[in-house]
Image (cartoon, rainbow, N blue to C red; front, side):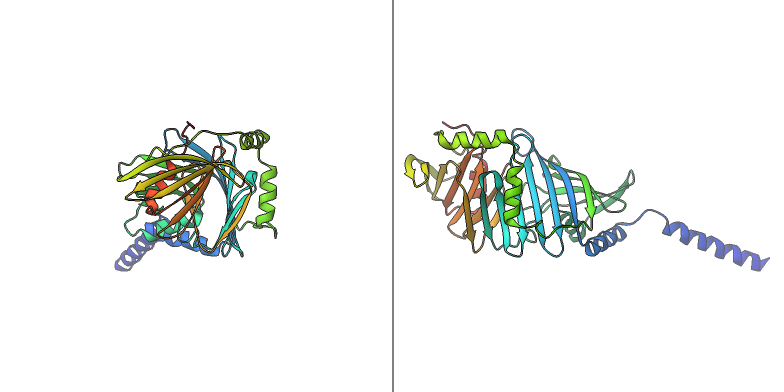
Amino acid sequence: MRRRFKWLVMLIAILSLVATGCGPKGASDAVADLNKQMEKMSGYKLNAELTLQTGKEPQNYDVEVWYQKPDYYRVALTSKTKDVTQLILRNEEGVFLLTPHLNKSFRFQSGWPENHAQVYLYESLVKSVTDDEQREFVEDEGNYVFDVKADYHNHSLISQKVVFTQDFQPVKVDVMDANKNVMVTVNFTHFEKDAQFDENSFSKDRNLETSSLTSSMPTMAKTDEEVQGSFGVIQPSYTPHGVNFLGVEKVEGTDGPQLVLRYKGDFNYTLIEERPKATHASFPSGEIIDLGETLAVMVGDKQKTMTWTHDGVEYLLVGDLPREELMSVAKSTLNQVGK
């Protein structure tokens, strides 16, 4: 009788261990498995829909990401309303920001994306989940859900909810402000791990050529028409405290008319506006800046320069502004009506 009782106790213990092993995955186990998948993958392709709530109206983008280990990237961001595509490309030559329909490219050495997490990059999501030791984790409707800190060089974005399937494919990301308002949403529609690429997939010249061919004719026609005509002054709606607007001057540049807006005070800067032209520039250093509705390039330290294109106008902002103030001025030009 005593022997039977011992066997019964052992059987219950074994069944308990088996039940535990088959039970819900803990946060540490899920994070470990997530990192294992990232380490084992040779690369991936993904598609997603990106929605920004940071302006007056939601901005919607189609996102396509190609990644090949160890550090080749191709990110295509296409505005659904304007049908304009910009690409971030990283290959053995450096990091490029391409605007194919304008035949425009900027090349520079950069720590992107290691030093600049992006909400649509799989490895950025994995890193955010791994690095936050205060993460919250639940299983919901067969998915793994992590609540973690957000670190996207934007002080207004505080936290994010990252959702993966149980085999760690990305499902959705909601990035929130301090009041838990969702400011950025990414819905992933396709994810292919260990994807294959041809030898020219990350070529700058090929991507400039093929992406410009797929741009819509209405967009191209609109740009050509705008380049030939004049345009009104786009005055930023934001001016830093202690800075005064001195006025605007129209000058004749080497490639057509330019509008020059000057500001002076605690910070001194100049904003130059003109019609876009083909540009292929190279910088020893630089940073890709996400302005929400377009991508910009920033170079310099104390004296900074930022350039971006939006709605048929090319901007060049030069001054001694801090990084955050520079971005605020640039963002406040978006969706402004020319005067």
